[in-house]
Image 1 (tube, rainbow, N blue to C red):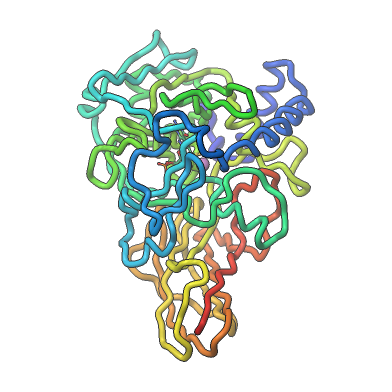
Image 2: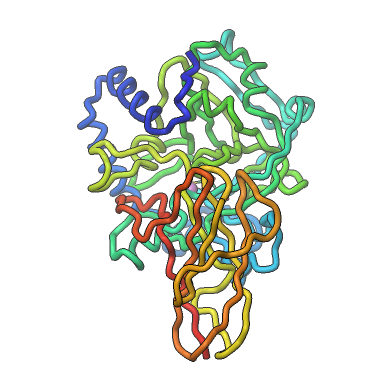
Length: 411
Ligand SMILES: Nc1nc2c(c(=O)[nH]1)N[C@H]1C(S)=C(S)[C@@H](COP(=O)(O)O)O[C@H]1N2
Ligand SMILES: [Mo]
């Protein structure tokens, strides 16, 4: 069985956890201890003191301060830098999330290795050229960090969370061209018994809190791998740039950014469930409203943002058009409402609907009297999921979907 129904995340997580615990002689309580240790270790990143970075610069492309806010090895896009941009985020404005540093990889000597018990024969290798010769596909898809919006757990809900204190700029939408993972898996001899694949990056081992967690890697159920996952070698019509995974990265639409492994080097294909620290200690929702062992983070949630700086200034008594974007891992956005102080009003959509990107919108606004005002946007997706007022707490601050209160100043 390739695990039909395992794209239902909750089913997948429960099934895999049980299988994994049984197979490894670990109790659920043991897993919980692992997870707790992980969240402690997590506090180590996000704020690298100056001088601790390796000689290689963590991010290669320029990071002008008017476009990016930098946190250690990561850089988030400022939302005002998306004002006037179309559906796609240009590479020069696309956020970067690096566990270590962008490696320099030569496409000419690069190889992708597939191996494991889920393949009919032995290991199989593909060169860059091999991939270019396979049938290509182009998709528009967001890549969003599961921790996007994390800082609002603290600033809006007064809660402690670990990890990079992103605002809402850890998302970008691009046009990705490449080969379907299903095509490559079929060529490599995928069997009916394969259940998980484990894509792994070629960047340096991730060391945190004195522990080496090895290469950045995260299991994907075969059902998702065969559904819509791309091995991308182009971003917005150009070869994939260094910071975004050159020469080849995974693009896993709708799922947490960590699934979209950059600088792809190896894929294990297994007929038994696979684990890595990125599905046991990270990317689990741990908190009072979740089961003791936590819930696995897979699909992204509904969010909205204004294309404005924090504390944007407006002249009193002016007529303005407020613009923003909303998106969801569940599919396209059906409705967006905006509250500028007088209740919810429906925003007007701009441009085409996108299943795996975002929906742009606008709404007129009269700025009124001087003072601080709060702008709020709330989206609903095709599944009926709407942004709540509060997101239930989880200790690592993932999947913040509550309505964000955006302050502006009228002068
Ligand atoms: N090899 C590798 N892949 C990776 C990462 C990484 O550090 N190393 N970071 C992941 C995370 S957490 C996110 S959110 C996305 C970010 O993609 P971007 O840097 O292209 O925006 O890449 C994912 N893939
Ligand atoms: Mo991420």
